[in-house]
Length: 389
Image 1 (tube, rainbow, N blue to C red):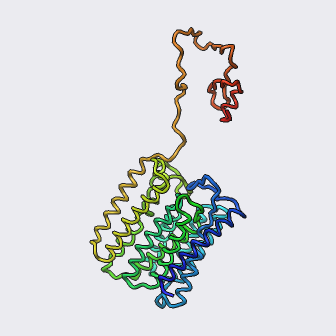
Image 2: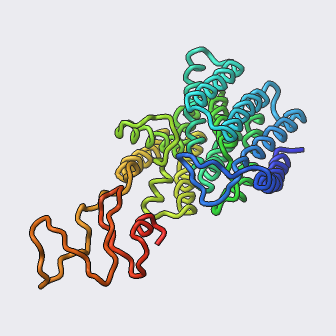
């Protein structure tokens, strides 16, 4: 079967099996455990990434065995390491793990892959750092309906075009299957989402994309300007992670734990809808992917890569102005709208004015010390203060 056929097979496998695993998860297991990034308002399965992993690894392995990848292409090693990291992500989906442990697992997976890829020591260290960074970046994008899958589809399509230009059939096969599988998952992940990809799917996606960038960069001829073009393809994921790191550093908050301070959360705070967030992130990914691909093809000067990079930098500075930390704004100590009626006598300072005889006496809540007026039906003020009135 050809590469196009492989993609079609991966697409249908993902669409059909994701629906099945959603029904099974809802029937036999609890909903998604809300974390700092996503808080579902209804029961939501979180194992959608399992199908993506199985689809990409199964079809990619079959295509490689059928000779669709050039001899010696590191497709199978990349799939094997990505699949192992996805299994670790599945463990986290079932039982949340420490962020440092997750980071260590990604570092080990990156080190194994770069050693298999046969890179020089200095390049291998830089490649491993890049893989860990980008894997975390795509994992963090899984915070809004369809956000991660949308950005990943666009990014993988740009990388696929670059691989086609270089005739890297192994990377072409892997990315074509990934694009098809992610497109199929969007049927279920787009708003209103019916299942989440979870850490299993997002870690796998990020690692495959990062590993593909390393493979393309290592084999790219000098005229490709790969050092500019390929990072530009990742502009949205990089900008989101940079925003979070800068924001948490400024607020003196821990850098690793999940939190509601990503691009999607800030856009939602200024009244963007979930589909609107996916559109904005997708548009940014399209700009980066198109620019990076044209630079890689030699149709644009490498300096053109500064345009989406500068746009992402300006967006980060603008989004930093949207508050995401802390609770609700403080209320004034004096209750609003409770002015003294004109013409009524008042007692001395500090003297209590008894309530009218026709209504029950007001009560004071123990938590805040604020006086809660009695309801017209005479129900106890404590019930009203607790939100049950």
